Image (cartoon, rainbow, N blue to C red):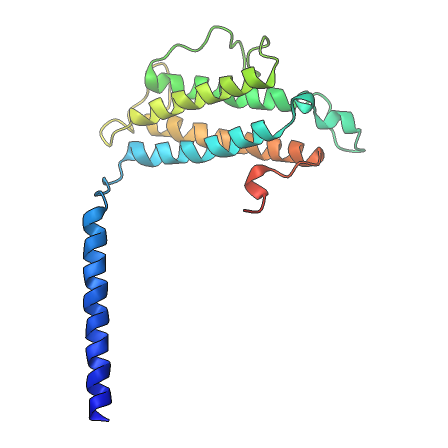
Length: 196
């Protein structure tokens, strides 16, 4: 019994030493992670909604980009005049420019006249490029945030810099929810809801 106990202790020590050596070797092989900053945290949130929105925009077939629930004539649905799928996507992108440009100092593209986006963008490819470009501006906006300036009012705005950066994310999530419904109304499972 004593030998069994000693054997158990020896095996346990070897396992601990082996695990500790393995963990130490792993730690040496991994690059140290930078401490999170306000900029990196906001940027991560922008990346998360960007993926959801871009994947949803890519999932809708081009021939359904002009779909709106108004065409379904659902009794009591009150869908008259709602945005089409294409305009939902352009609205997110246009809003991104309006919300994030005060943080970067970038000029809003001249073809954006209102929240519905450029009327001249018609193809799925052009609309998705416009969307991706607007999220690139979001990443640039996030990079401007520091703990020193995040509560300062942005130039040409009445809002603090942090609020503008995060409001762009919240706004996009709101319209992403509508995009998901449009996809499902067309028999398309949103990419985020598909099995792995």
